[in-house]
Image 1: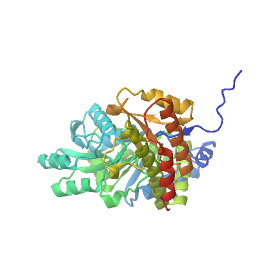
Image 2: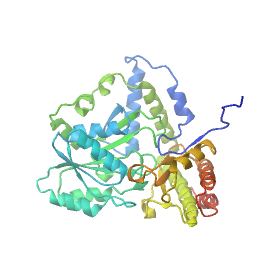
Image 3: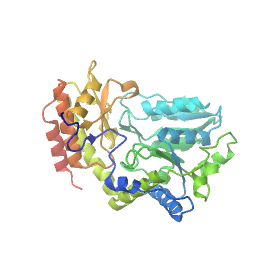
Image 4: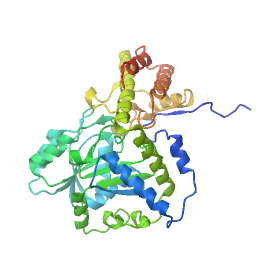
Length: 397
């Protein structure tokens, strides 16, 4: 009988989950310990301090959850706005809308700013909404730093300036799920009150851990919201006893992995990590520039300055079978890429290039994607991979 074994490794280039380094896998492959073991508190403390360093915050308190990013979102909602109160969600595409829908589902009112396809957050619309809120009903402004579906990174500093210019007291809450450890983010310097993230992207860990960093102002707001909540409650979780920090047994093996990943990040250094992500992203962007000369493909992000260092969304012509393209890339060429989400479903595919990724890996992925495009008869310009090679060769780190 023919073997079902696949030689080598399948390249994982979705924007999450991302490849997990061996050191992280090995750290997780140990027996957990009883909760009185002092290593439990040491591991949790290392994860908390490592996340604060990664977020560039001195004062924010870190809360970790056995959850995905949607759990992180819900913890934010439950602590910054009471049922019936209002938050503003800045339009960035699929993930801002998902956050808005989830917020409405738990009884909050949502004001949305519109998203224009291919564009970052509409700052003019945000400023107008803040000026219109004379009664300061808006409790918080939610912004997705990098929307994984659109692959667009929106600047955060202008949002803080807009809040300050309007004299508006709303908290600034930023989703850094797809940007943290891939692009610069300085929580305190940006005036961000709450940052929310997850483990399965730039942090190079399996899915299953969400985290929130809340500064003193945000924590005071949470203390003042006398609403029913338990698992997500920041006030309840701010505790010295390890299991109280997790509302029960901590997800120890996930924490072991996170501690190892944070150690790898510290060893490489954030400036080097940001430069590596910029280098790899430039290679992907160069390849797509070449492919789109065939007249079929294009960037969803119109402005090159907004194209993220984490993921690239590539638009395809109407009638293209994106799932067939993904299947050929995955099964024949061993490169797993993502499809379009939300309004881009069936209209795009996405190449993830964040986390534990280096130039050789991205060249292999791009070659596999190019082969799949040719196999599927999608018109592409010649030399996309060669452009990526030249982009890498031209980059000095």
